[in-house]
Amino acid sequence: MANQKVEFPSTQWFQALAARMNEQRAKYQNFGFVTARAVFRVTATAAGNRNFGLVFDGFECLEVRELTDGEIAQFDPDWTMEGDYATWKEMVQNIKAHGEADPDHTLNRLCLLGHPFRVHGEDQTRVDVFYRQLFSFQAFIDESAAVETSFA
Image (tube, rainbow, N blue to C red):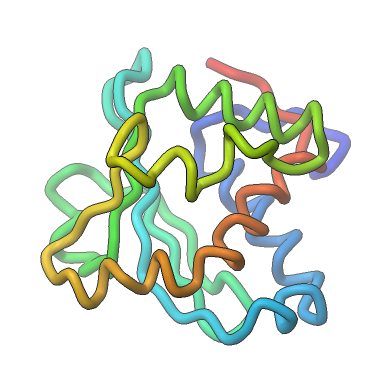
């Protein structure tokens, strides 16, 4: 999949990141155990809002699937990271250009003030999982540097 272009946003794109994570257990062990049910939400796409539910456990991403707005509650995420398509695209392009996010395009920077990304959920204790395990989620998104990405 590394040589084949994968469209963002899509289930296949997040699956490509998951495959890379799952092939690099030792790298992710350095960040510590990660366990989360996460939704990555991309708003304002040509096709409307897109939601991707991912399940992380240990040092792997075990599940990736697209969710409708109505399925998010049933998926029961610990947190949802939400941002518009233009911001996601800029972040992914930045990661590709630098091999990882530069300081202005890290998840921490983009989510810190709730703008341009917002991390939210029903239970603040569960939302805090995002911040406690941030290095793993940043490394996961940084895997996109090795994925040939096309944009809708």
